[in-house]
Amino acid sequence: MIEIEQHQGWAEIVMSRPERRNAMVPSMAAEIQAAIEGLSKVSEVAAIILRGAGGCLSSGIDLKALQSNQDPGSDDGHWDQAALKSMHYALYGCSKPLICALEKFAINAGAALVFACDLVVAGNESFLQVGEIQQGADIPMNAAWLRLKSSEQTLSRLALLGDRVSAHELAQMGLIQKVVEDDSVVACAREWAGRMASFPEGATEIITERIRGFRPADVSLVFPESTNSALLSAGLLKA
Image 1 (cartoon, helix red, strand yellow):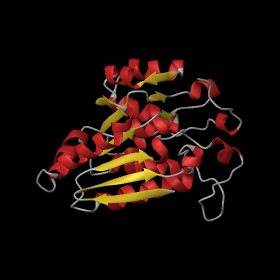
Image 2: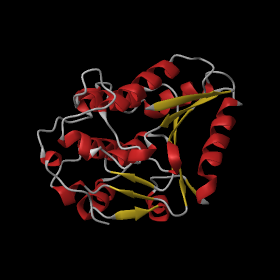
Image 3: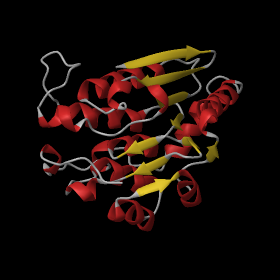
Image 4: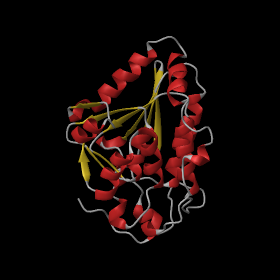
């Protein structure tokens, strides 16, 4: 469900469920967690790119799989919600800078992956949507990441309206660093990763540790528990 592409001094994690628009299931989250934890231990890796196959990032939680309690990639075929939270713990603890290539869209749980990254490049026509309010659902991961990296007003703008927010508006909010032509997103992310790889070995880890040093050390204080089960019966989002 994911592919790891190794380059000279950096790596890419590619979510590969293009037939489901890279919708998230626990087994894919577990693979991302394992990849993050593994690459964090490789001294030669200066940066990690997170992107989706098929020219889009992620459509969020796979509602069809969740509502049928199925995970096609798991050993027993069942949905394991804990794996999704464990993935975010791994992203939080990653010692390497994370670069997100936001192509086309990132919706709900996909948006949380964008906010988890340190640098984001997005396509000119791409958008992000924190639309759980339309479904009566909670936003524990989106809220956690946004409160780390932005203001309450920005979180309110995204979460209370639940609409599609363009890459250009996201840039104005300071949530992404660059907007490029849609066919140049991955190339720009790779350029950034290559630039980091050109610095002395370990330099990006030193700076990343300093940047993130103001975060709570106890990750359980950052990511809240949620008992909301609205997604178990929710429909798809409206535009």
